[in-house]
Image (cartoon, rainbow, N blue to C red; front, side, top):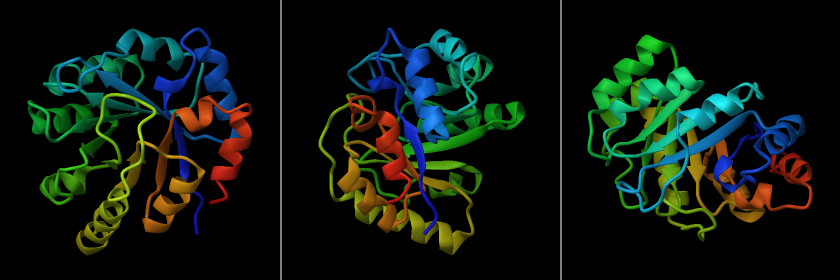
Length: 217
């Protein structure tokens, strides 16, 4: 089985130590950095703007998956791309224009991703999956870190894998929310390619050891 891609979530890093935290996970073998952007409307929390992405971009070669948990993402996709995003992942459920974000990503030669909240049918936005680089299955309600993993996400991951096989789509399946060493192994067995993890990595005494262990699940 191919090792999963580890995508530490910036939301759980120390805000006064982003550079060192990011350098540490990159050195340990993480390939992606997951950047949650929240507007206080689509989800009840606030987080990063393009200036943060621009700042950390200078210090890292990681693949930045910028997860826009916001309304009308077409207004903000390009600023985050200019700041250094490698992929813009949006929510199909959010108010806004998916087609416009797709077009912006294509014209900017960056990846496009779709994220699904826990109650959203996996096939609801299937018409866009041929253009997806990432399909993100949320295993908690989006908005806050440190939540408990919803086990029904495992079946949703399996459904996403079947859709990919049946349609010939090329997206990577990502999972985000409540991922620890136990749930990570369950998700990989179900078909996940990318593990988004915040607290489990950045709260560990040695985040590098956790990443190396995860890459062996």
